[in-house]
Each structure stands twice: as C-alpha cells, then as structure tokens.
Image (tube, rainbow, N blue to C red):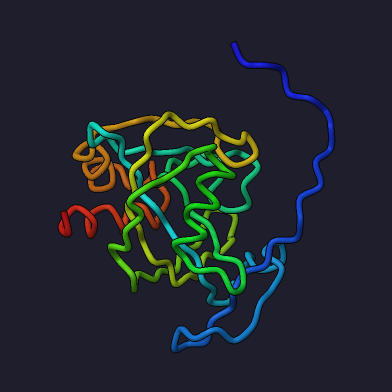
Length: 184
C-alpha cells in the first residue's frame, strides 16, 4: 500500500529548453512551460529505453497532468537537456528525477532522430530527439507528477504494440521502436 499524497506545495524551478534552428544548431532558450503549444518551435529533447538484466524493457505511462500525451504509454524516460547540458547527462538526470532510477551503460543509438507530432488537444511536439538505450538495475519509484504507471515488458511485445496498436503508445515511441529493433 502506498502512502497518501501530502498537500504540501513543491515549487519546481523554471525548466528551460534549447531552441534549435532549421539546421539543428542552438539558437536560444525558452521556458519549457511556454514552448509546447499549437506552434511549438523546434527544440532539443531526448528519449531513452532502459532494460533490466533479463532484457525486459521498462515502459512508462505518462501522468494525466502532462501537457502532451497525458496518460499515454511511452518509452522509459524522455525530456529536454538544460542549456549547456549534454543529452546523456540529461538522460541520467531525468531518470533519477522522474523514476528514482540510476541508469548505467547509457548509449546513443539514434543520435539524429527528429519528429513532429500533434496530440488530440492540438499541442505540437517538434523535436530533435537523440535516442538512447540504458540498463536499470532496480524497479522504478516514479514521481506521480511525471509517471502514472510502469511495466517491465518483453522487447518483442513492445515492438509488436507499436506496429499493431500505435494509438496505445506515444507517437515518438511508435517511430523509435522499429528503428531501435532494426539496430539491435
């Protein structure tokens, strides 16, 4: 049984994202809270797919309070590097913050991945999003503001869901999983 949530307000620092030009080079920064909308500028992000020692993939379901794709199943962790922060560092930081996980063997697999997608509410994701794999040696202890649920799944099952039921996953996962599978 989990402990009841407290009503204590936790002030979060302003999170900034790196804005990118058409050529993928940094052109500035912006407050993350103001970036995602109907006309989202191109910006830097990352995705990571973590497996355990048995090769199972950790999928997470986005919290219902997320601005984009709330409640949708997705990769292990995704986010945005802070200005001046490397993508690999951001993967490690966000896995710790969102999932309470320490990742190891963080490896870039799709360094040039980029996509644009619009969710049902009209919010656009427009990202250059390097994709990483990593290994997690424990079960997550997620921040409920970020992750509603999590599951360890067989890699083949995740790839199959992306192919057969793409509506059940985030659009970036639907695009990334077949590419990652081909690279395995």
